[in-house]
Length: 274
Image (cartoon, rainbow, N blue to C red):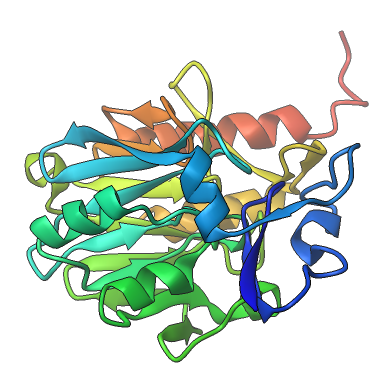
C-alpha cells in the first residue's frame, strides 16, 4: 500500500496497492494528460531524484520549489507570521531538509492552498507538522484526492487566519483563492495568488484564465468579480505561483489595471468603425 503521486500534476492520492486508473485532475479541461500517458510515483521514489529548493524572497518569506522541476512546477511559500507560520500552496515532495528547516523556523500553524492544481501532498505536509489544519475552499471539495482529519474546508467569501486573510476569487476554479498578509513588505502588505491571478512574464500585470495550458479564457463578469474580491485590501507585492512571477511594487493598482486591460481585450468591438 502506498500514496501514489501523479507525475503530470503532482497530486498525491489516497493509500492503495495499485496506482489509480486515471487522474481526474489531469483529465479535467483545465489540465491535460501527457502524450506519453498517465504515470505515477511516490514520496520515497520522488525523494531519490528530487529535492526542495529554498529561496529567501523577502524578510520573513521563503519560496519552495522542486528541483529538478516536477509536475506543474509551482512554488509554495513558507510565510513567517506573527501568529505562527503559514505554508501557502504545496509541493508533492516533503524532504528531510525541509522538515528540519520548517522545524527550525518554528513549525507550521496552518496550510492554505489556492486551488486543486496545487493540492499536491498537502495532507503529508500536515501530518509531518502535527496535523496542522489544511484550508481549501469547499467549492473545490470534489478535487481532493487524499483526505484526512486535518482537512478544513471553508465556505465563506473570506476566512481569517488571525492576521492573514484567505479570499475566494473563483475564476480558475470555483473556490480559487488568494492569501493576504498585511505585515509583509514592512507593513505594506503582500498578496499570494498562485495562478488564481497569474503574474505575467513582464511582471507588470496579472491575468486570468479558466485553463492556462489549454487557453480557455474567463468572461468579463467573472474577472470583474475577482478584482472586486481583493479591492478592499492594500498590498505592495504580489507573489505568483511560479518562479520569477513576483511583482514587487504597487500590487493593488496592478490588479486594478490588469482587470481593466483584460476586460477591454475581450469586449466585442465588431461594431467599431475604423
